[in-house]
Amino acid sequence: TINREYNLIITYGNLSPDCVQVNVSQQSSLLVNGQFPGPEIRATYDDILIINVFNKLESEDLTIHFHGLFMNNTPHLDGVPYISQSPIKPNASFTHVFRVQLVGTFFYHSHVGLQAITVFGPLILEDKLSQSLSDIVLMLSDWWHTDRLIQEQGLFSPTFTFVGEPTSILLNGKTMYNSSYTCSHGYHVINVTKNQMYRLRIIGATTLATLNFAIAGHTLTLIEVDGNYVKPLEVSYLEIASGQRYSALFITNNITDNYYMFADVRWRKNIAHNGIGILHYENASDAPNTIVPDKSLLPYLPPETNIYLADSLQLQNDTLSLPSNADREIILIGTQVRNYDGGIRWAMNNVIYISPNSSYLLNDLYFNNKSLISSSNDLSNLTNGGYYAPDNTYPIRKNEVIDFVIQNTVALNGVCEGHPYHTHGHNFWDISYGDGEYDPNNLSNIHVIPHPILRDSIFVKPSAYAYYQYVNSTNYKKSCGWKKIRLIADNPGIWPLHCHIVSHMMMGMQIVLEEDLQDLRILYAKDLLTSRSTSIFTTIFTTI
Ligand code: C2O
Ligand code: CU
Image 1 (cartoon, helix red, strand yellow):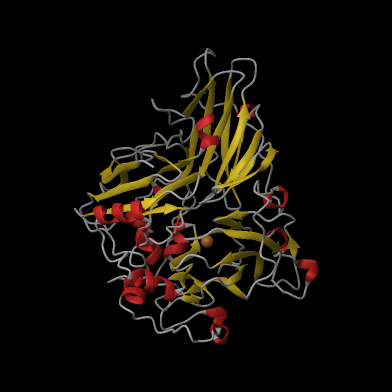
Image 2 (image 1 turned 180 degrees about the horizontal axis):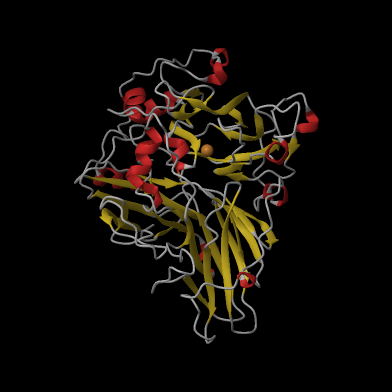
């Protein structure tokens, strides 16, 4: 066990990652330690990570979330403003100290407003296998020429302006907007040597786009999905939604050359087409990374299909098995609604999630004993899918097995959209999906995934049926496809479950799980959670 300490210092910056110099406010682009993307955090299983976050922004709050980590026994370090902690105010700092209890590919990102457009970086948790392979980290993200703060205002304005489709797709923070905008940094270049095996860790750090990714002339063998090893599966391309991560092995060819990588938008209007990078073999001619390539050199990316990759995946560890049934099924219907002021919001089961804006929920509900729901209450009596209005949460009892059915419906403009959902504090089993409306009795519309895997981020597709046929269909319903996940309540805490399209989350597409009140209070009583001091945490971790 090693203590590894990192500082993350968030400041204003001035970025033109796609070579276009845009006229935005000084507060628009944010940097981590002066960099974009932020620095890599790397640790080994069982290490203790000490991460000090400094907010050097003059007028914005900040929190950092470690996407995919469970924060067992430390839910107050999960980095969600006004939920797990009060946000870090300008010129303040916050320290996260926790033991590494997972291995795989993760990332950290801001959980405030649209800051995550640039405030993110890789979080790589190693084990023996990863130490024996050369790894390459590739973060995919989306970028706008619009001022981030103006985008935020647009979302909450009564006249509503959406953030719009990204103008560029970035590979490790770089691309060129189009052929008339070139600049010295050009496309991102990955350097390799011939006849070698690499582990490519691909991180879906977009705030909106779902991407399809491939490397010309190379196949990818998937071995890890969201921190879970899977049986090797060879693919020629990979769909990756916001919040998802994959590790893929690839073997370089016998001839030195340059090959293009390409990440292109799927399931929404695509105006970018520029998510390009270069795989450069040692001794090949200089990588042409400031020249826009001929399209024919880009790898082929097939169009959208209604097939989920999950149908072909299998966990490496066969001792983990899906609980055969759930104690409860909670249906979560995501709908786009008009706000009282005329603006547009997203609601889950008719509730637009509005974040508290003082104190914080974990403190109020657990530490200060303010939760109104008691352990003697029968949670199955809760209406509206298990929503408990007084706490604005979905209470969940210790060790309950819960199925969440996430149902997409048409937006106000009549279009079906896909939504990438992420659970904090948990993995879940990815178990089934279907087109149109979920109906537990209509077995013909329930596609059961043959070998469910565990993950923490899924994409609920717009559904091919609805996506392609809604205009002409006579008996068209407003439902656009669904997905079911199975979650085991084994982690006391307050955990958001939300759409990982950051603007949708801000518009209300979120619920909060209030899980296992009693055990967290016991933990609290033991005094483990009261102190925020690093030294105390270090002591705790070396003694438990
Ligand atoms: Cu990566 Cu709550 O999100
Ligand atoms: Cu969404």
